[in-house]
Image (cartoon, rainbow, N blue to C red; front, side, top):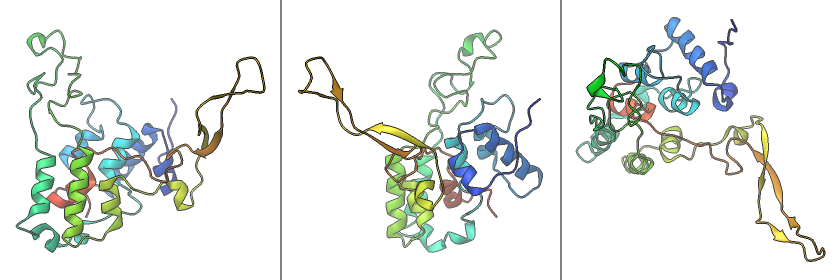
Length: 235
């Protein structure tokens, strides 16, 4: 049986596409009690067997964040949460508003009426979670970032994560793999009679594709939402 390397560094955490390696690293941190997860986060990263399949790397990074540069609850100032009668906290609560999935009615099964026959088939609408909203809307997260900034938050790690403007590892001095992307549409070559197209390519980072920002997928158990609502695993 192949054993994954349970030791990771920051570069590997930010650039890897191997969710199993990230999953095993989190499991090691849990076993050593250097990492603690809430029940919701525990469920999302797939630690509980049978709840859902192996989570993607995007889920792991959004729920856990960067374990090598963690933002802790003590970094969240009370003045941010009490600004304008708790506007920041109200926005965060609206984002994670739990609603029962209309398809499976919270049973997590694809066919609740025949549960005895379809017990191994999770609901496709909610991915077997029984909740209507699993992913957080990127626009709602941007609104939360604006509210935090108006409340006095200047923590770039929090604001950039919510707005999806986190620097790509290639902009942090970390070497990433490269890919070639098309930069211009095909154009016919007039110097040749036969059909021929000239296409320009450029080699860019395979993660950000030249934008300089790492793609971010937000979920209800996002580490920023956990910090704001006081349900974070961070000490």
